[in-house]
Image (tube, rainbow, N blue to C red):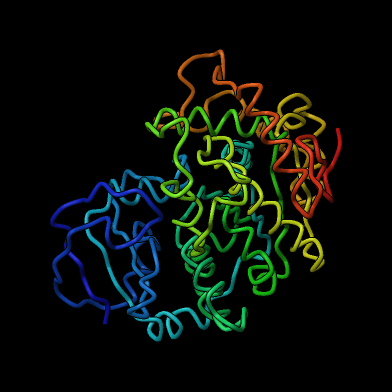
Length: 368
């Protein structure tokens, strides 16, 4: 039986989707098949300590294929939560077939991945979901398990549940950046998936993130022993910032960001070494050569080129409109990384074993 969790209050807390975002009260138990029969019920997060999956029940007018961030819409609009045990979910999904065509969108963040999800949503017979956090929840679970494939049944069930109501369509899922760390497991479960990796020039990426962090009120510099690594909230690590500080007592926002950047790129290179197939796309190429780049993407993922004109309409609006990350005007990002911060970023990249530069072209990058 499925357990109803009634929402008493929402809690304003930063971090990935989890039960701590709500004050809850246990309600009645209902037939577990409701999570398949009701298309307004969607998978929200994993309560791994209790071995259960959590679903949100949303109003009928909430369309998760059109929102910039699925996890945010679920948290804001949920009328109640529903919990099922792993065992119940496995039994419920064992006869469900995944869509034949699946597109997985990975990225460094601030690199056009939300835009790509929006573009794909313009294509007939494609359903794209932007950042369902249940897949982010899988990252630390997989990382902290000695055998990385130990939770393949859980991974498969999550994808089956997200694809259930779209079985006859192409399913696209855009992940948060940390999910690149689990791409090998996702690929093993979904060998038919086509993987995209979106990134951008490092200084441009740092400038974009610096604007976001400044808007959130993050100090421009912090003592090393007081600075926390943003990514640890999502990837399950305990990262030290002493390495990027390189003996300095203070770390700036761009220096803190380099720990995040290097986490993403280390994971991407690791996946490439494992022969996980990717098409890598630079944001600047996607934005400046729209027709050419989308043609290459469509050919790679197997979408009809006859839909290209419709897809190009995705460029016409801010993909993050209505969120804290939206553009404030048509000028784009006016926040800049200072000259001394640029030199610090270059030094951090040069010290790394990958011997990166701000203009490094990642393996499998497609050119205009």
